[in-house]
Image (tube, rainbow, N blue to C red; front, side, top):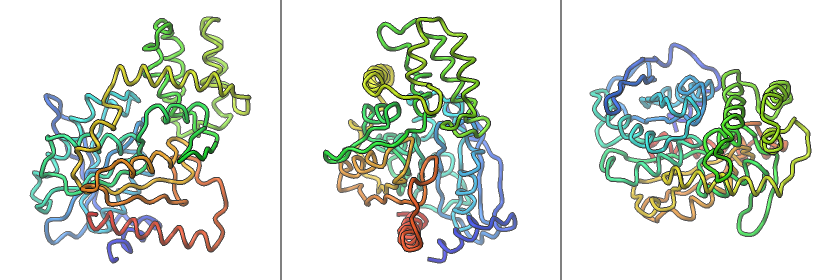
Length: 364
């Protein structure tokens, strides 16, 4: 557990002397793209390595939470590479582009002389978690990936979109509701609204909602806070009158009543349009092909992707790949936790998280 101890020391009290940051590039097709490598300041031998994937975020590889996590991983004795994925940085889903990006990053890291032989690991967050599973299921990474840690991924696109708008999700017939982080909904609408029959001309609404996601990501403003309400009002006023009711469904002022029936209808339409445009969004056809050891993790109070999606992934992974899943009350995509864990609860969740870290840092 020495690696976990070093991870926690760096995570709690970052020390620039423990970890070096190196700017590099990697090649995707004809493009040369930037990447950042974090490595222990003292490394007497080649190290085990991870490609760490950011999610759909404007800050991309500079996301503060991701940088903190990557530095702590490096302090634990791992070389970490975060590739810049420009489509995700621009909040464009584009799985047909991003899967080759994952493969290119893995190939680039595997070729480094300071990386130990035997394959690299992939640690994917959020959208990157599920896309890592899809990428590894193909032949392009055979023999190069020793394991995958997928944090906060999804299994079912339709359930994901429904949660993003209505906050409703369920597991084994038991329904739950929480206020969703609207950031995810805004990305869905910005990418797929005009693909819905009858909404092909709603470019103004798609652009307005996309700009809300960009503003939240760029400034770090929590999407559920009223800080963005003045921007919503300005954007709504600039829309054609016929499109304003739609805007009210997907970007209402904070505290406004949400029509869940209309929200569920719109979520279904968006999911259908998304799957038609980007079939690679659906991990279902690829999961049974996965043979790479895979560890799943999720935050219980995640407001972007509900923890029930991790449970579905765990259920559907083939036995040859499934290394189990952990739902933790300590971390989520956004908004922290909904409940006070108390002293005992915090200890219990802390032990669970440390065990999870140990499995990741020990390469699954």
